[in-house]
Length: 54
Image 1: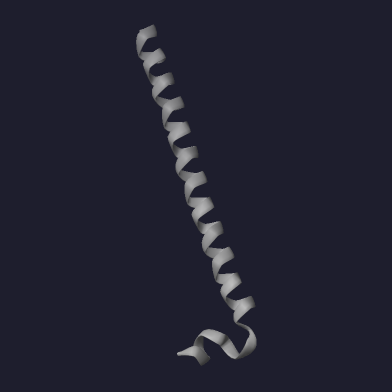
Image 2: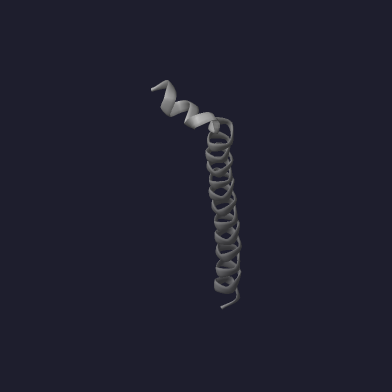
């Protein structure tokens, strides 16, 4: 198991690459979720104002 985790001496590069990739994926998910909520709020606000004009 220790040999697998050490990755033949390249463990620092391999595991840091996994950590960076995973971190970026989390940031992209959070950003996308926030943008989606922002767009939904905008859309709801404009639908309400359009319905009130009729």
